[in-house]
Image 1 (tube, each protein chain N blue to C red):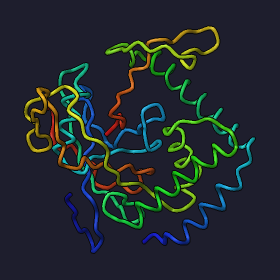
Image 2 (tube, rainbow over the protein chains, first blue to last red):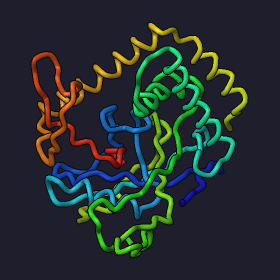
Image 3 (cartoon, rainbow over the protein chains, first blue to last red):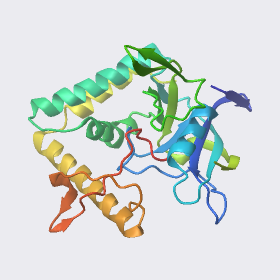
Length: 190
Length: 80
């Protein structure tokens, strides 16, 4: 993860992948709506360009055949860092479990995605939490062969299995005000 | 810097202020919002490619079947 300091303030560098746009570059990241946002509506960035490129190759070339990667400096001072900060991680976990248990106590069926939305909509902003750093389960769903830095394929009992040894870290930021210097980093990639 | 102890107390206060009716209202709101976004994307033509068929009661809005429009990636974060 890359961090830079501007005027004595530290920012995390994030990478945002979108399909190449014939009409020109984006001025700001695209808000991920509730249909697809797993930690709630927000601006999603990868913390490493490697995963931003994989995301583009796999999911952002549908119409034009090309994708763009943008970079930005993100103020993560008030983000929950559940990847590397033990206190933040267990707080996040307790919040999630308390919310799930509360829905169950009240006999309301819900999904994990809805609980994340519930937290984002009703809690994080009120608590002054401006985003979340999180790592998910990486995948190589299209079995691209060039992913040697994050996946090892190996044989076990005659079957190919994959070991993902590198964390795929994302940051979701709930407001544009935490995102600075959003610029095209890699254009027209395929 | 986030004060986690203080935040946890605030979190509990907010959570336990929700009544059963509040939770029901919120779930209804969230589900309607998601369906609305599906339809908006369908109208814009954004869901026509790479469609995976999935049948569930939630793929119906009124009498309008939107079966087959669920092409959500399991890799979540669409915009990342």
